[in-house]
Image (cartoon, rainbow, N blue to C red; front, side, top):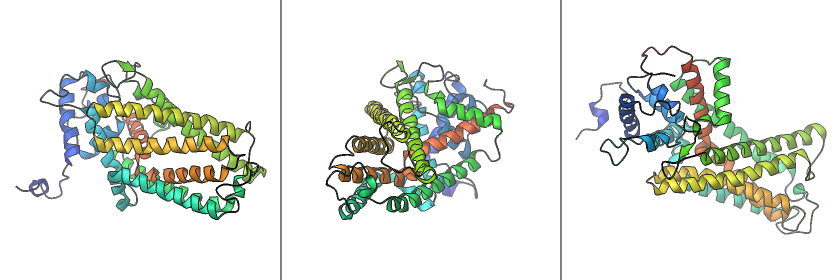
Length: 380
């Protein structure tokens, strides 16, 4: 039997089976409209009669996978139409990350996320354990007054992390720009950017579109997924701010680590670390619930890889903070830095990217809402 590519007209874009499934279920949803008020996906859907590849990618990343539409749908499995919008969208989202990745050859790492995370973690831990063993302090030593740089010099850490961080920022930026150019070429107004930022910071569409929350194990609404996402997101932001403030202290004020427990970098890092303990742990529990209901194992591994790295980074960081005046500081420092390096290495090729792609989709929606709905088929 000939392949689909052979049957398509020359130059035509052939949809991947995952993309074709999204187009199929959205055609059914567009005829039904029961979920029109649930989230941004459905009013955006009503502006379209057909779903080309760019629109499929856009709508897939606009979906927050809250599950409300699945639990409300009369055509969901075991109905013969088998409409499962969250699962269909999630499969396409994973493809968009891989297809827009930079360098393109590393996009395949999304498909091997478990191996990618394991290798990155092994590499990070091995690197810093060896460096700490060869350093001045060693893994186990007499108390060093909390001075991390007595184990691993500041210049060495900057030399290792700065290039990796720069590459991560470049790779993520190129990927998101490629996605934006595909789904929404052109600029966005300040008003649209402000609305999108507001929706990102509030995680607006994790409330099911009606303020009651998502559906997890059953038809009851719950806000726990939104709360755990908030703890994770703002925990990460606080940890990043902690590192930024410490950098300013070091280079601008000449105040070098270790910092007191009551200092701004430590307070920010402690609060952020607590968020990254609670948030990922809660998201992992919700992920298990969804997997037991028939979720995709490959997509679950993508979620859990990021959850694991965030949790390990936080746990090791808080342990290091608590025991930095002990003889175990060298060992804990190596473990923490190994986890941080693994997190950095996997950022452009793991679930971390979803936040940037979803933000771009929300910006596209904010732009689109300000334009007339020429089809006049649905309300915004």
